[in-house]
Length: 233
Image (cartoon, rainbow, N blue to C red; front, side, top):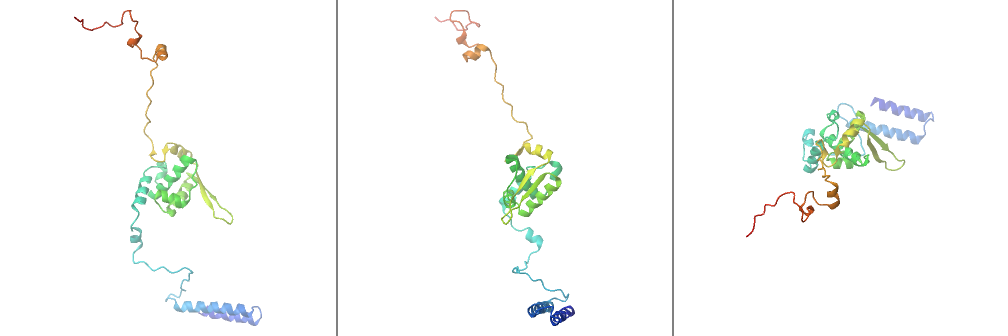
């Protein structure tokens, strides 16, 4: 209070010296009076009440822990857990990310595997991974710090910024996602072998009939195998 009184005295002193015009002096004194009223309504600590242009939200009856364990969308929750198990990041880096961050990186690595880059928005990545926008930003920030990704911001003057341009720059991570199939995860099992076609002989290739068929035998000549047909009559 004493400081506000001294402030008002200094204002009128400057006004008397003609350093301030009357309108400015009245405006400053009115501001000091509003501050004095706020201090009178403040609690015993003497701090001024916070003033905000936004409406004050009613205080919740639940604690932060109870609010964090509220109802969740089971589809988004299941999608997040499923994508996090796909191991889109190398094992030596996987421990640095939470389950939600791993799910977000799965979407990024999937787009980089298919298109060579990821230019989706943070909200779209979060919706596809079943996580929030903050989790996606944390995942990209950690991956950039570890040297896995390079995130390029595309700002525009007097317009909404374009989505970030994300590419994989780590050499071992690039080799890792080369084995990566976006819909089925990583394939470590060997692929199936094709059965080799029989070469046969030149005669078989020309005639198209299997080797040693009875149609190749001469009609009146000796047969390679005796006939075991029983005599008739």
